[in-house]
Image (cartoon, rainbow, N blue to C red; front, side, top):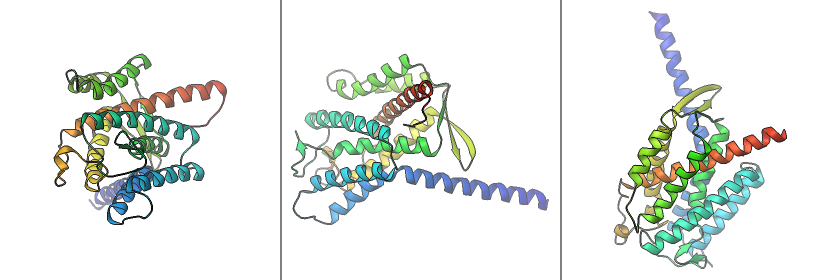
Amino acid sequence: MDLIVQKMEGKIVRALKQLVLFGWEQSLSCLFPVIIFASLAFTQIVTLPFLPRYDWLLLICLLMQWGMVRSGLETRDELKVITLFHLIGLALELFKVHMGSWSYPEEGYSKIFGVPLYSGFMYASVASYLCQAWRRLNVELVKWPPFYIVVPLAAAIYLNFFTHHYWIDIRWWLSGLVMIVFWKSWVIYEVGGTRYRMPIALSFVLIGFFIWIAENIATFFGAWEYPNQTDAWSLVHLGKVSSWLLLVIVSFLIVATLKRVKGNNSTSMGTSESL
């Protein structure tokens, strides 16, 4: 009996150690988003001189990005991916602000058509997290769908963010299609030398939910403003989880596709640089 109890205690202790280690790796992977949230909170509380708040946020994001590449926390290939997400996110921001989905009410020299340039870094931070976590957890994909299915699916999800303003919103159809396409797909990751696996669809949902939580924090600190938050801050509607879920899927599909392309090129060229 004592031996059984000892074994159970040992398993519990190991599980807790693995959970703490997993949380630590996730925290390191979230460095870029954490800096953005900290900057939003700090500039909300403290009024910095010389420049409007949005411009200070842009400078902080640029310095953070430079520091991560300079220190080796991010590779140059990862910087290319993050820059791509910055442009994708900025294009979406320009359109959504124009359509009145949300707004940036404060002044700033770095605003283009009502959108501050720092906003693109909020999308880039998602890519930064994915790249960091991918490398730190030694992620592998099992039964990944073919390229000719993944790319059109990601494109359709992204385009729906624009077209639903003029046509029907097909996000739920697209979500169902994602579940069908990735039904047999798994993500394998490593924590403390032990390999674990998770359905990719579940990872999409979890990341989307935590980004929704981050969105509530960001809007609380005035990163942007939804129409229902004009007079006073309120919780972002839970339905936004579906939007972030789809955006996470687009992000994941782009990063995964680029990593597979990079991996194939590295193998054929005999190089080992990782994305």
